Image (cartoon, rainbow, N blue to C red; front, side, top):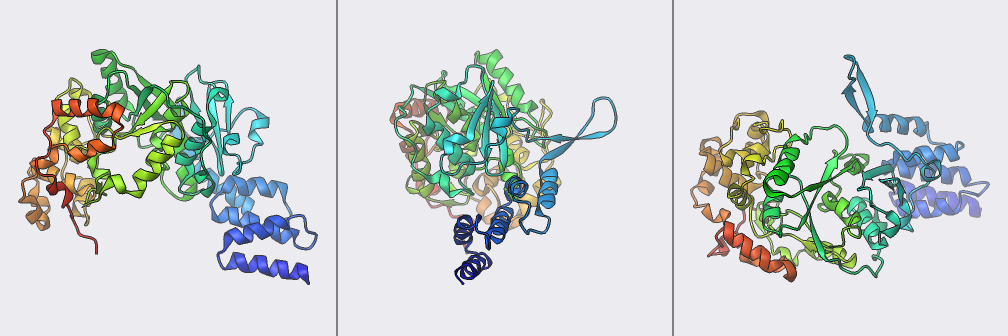
Length: 470
């Protein structure tokens, strides 16, 4: 009777959506003669529901007796669609299927299953390639030749795991191992676009610029970024560190497009390199548009936000200051900073450009290249679509760009908002300096004053409430 009760309890938890309880009961009963097969089947189905397809395959190879309606083959087919891209072969017109998630060559490492209890045990090094075993598979970074995983503090590996998996895995929220002291140097997660270039220009010249280089073919084109890297070297004598990685595929296991798992996954390569480079601070190019304005539409006190408190503390636990050197300027301010630099002719934020110009048809071209006087097709499908969306994305900056481009006729319903003087949007917000650590604050303030004016009336920003919430 007890065994029948356990089975019913397990199935009831599963059917009611209490998956944690179902997993707990099933895990205790996988070796039970009566309930073992049902327990294994439920565990496999739970991984299927979480879209952890590689784990489904792994478990079914270990438990072929599980009753799961051929989920192994279904998982294989899912991975085939997600894990490959089409590429023309060099010597013919044929298309090849190319894996974007290779696995470690070392068979002992390859057998490792994601360890949710000991997060640092999911990291491995093969020569200069750093591997991370996440719940659904493997991702990697091609690290500088001197990188040594054994000399990397566990706090950094735990923070890196957090920024990569937080949206889906609760275990990454554990306290970070204590004991890593703050280093002496500063690095910037650098994309090569307008915003991160403005951030670089407001930071000291010895700031390390670190680029996350997507290591697989996608819509993102690196040529515009590589052009600005060359300009940094030729004009200012500064190098940009490029770290190839495929970690942006982690999102695709959760039904999302390729991209960064969290706001700070764009700098995970710098977190991992923090001991090698003696880093005590990592900077990101977050603007007013995404800090003091929520989704570019409504003002919020970002200094009191859950986001800022969480991540600034999380970085600090790992011996790193989280630095947002342009949180006090807008996208318009970033454009004006770059305009006054020797790099302006070499910067292009368009991710579909050809290394010389932008595509002229995307939303980034509209609100970044357009205000710089570069050619933009205001009637392109993407720009037309985003101009008609309500609420409008990047709303405050989009309004400014519309006015700069003289495109008010394209949004007649916004005529009242466009009658206002929007020149304040190009000025710096003094309160934003309070978020910048003291050891960097004075320098950023001084450099900002070289490029921009400061807001005289901050209430204009603090009363922003575009497209009021319903």
